[in-house]
Image (cartoon, rainbow, N blue to C red):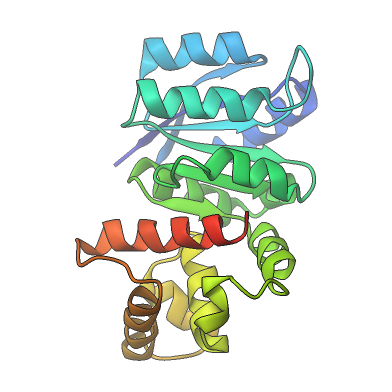
Length: 221
């Protein structure tokens, strides 16, 4: 299935570079490229794409325009996933983006742009209603919370935390198994334990994975 994508960034060189990279991907179609939040929202209304890729900092204030647009898009067009790009690890921005739910949202550092497979995987993941968080952002959030005694994350083993971190970046069980050098059966066991320790209700697998990541994000606020 070809993924229809709208891309927003106010930097001309970034727009040209990313467009050229994504143009090499057979299953990605860039339906429109824009340079500000107003044009982004208009393009989404017109095309109703499968996914949006947008910078966080855009005119007029160059602060959180991308986050505000991402949240608005998710409310108005729930079938459209959004991946936001940031130059630096900004944990407060990550939480602001995800505080109302992680489904269909991603947060990546701009350095991932050159890792085309990771960028494409994130776009596909959010288009399916999943989440995709940059590993460096996840690490920063976990480190910030590690010293707080009330965190539910403290009840997880080292391997369970590693599996949850991979889940937060949007990886499926097979990819988690390869990343952590363990069997898929072991991954399933750890995920089941994470669900239990985070006291998640018995729902569909996708919903529980999203809820687990949301519980993680809430714990790191």
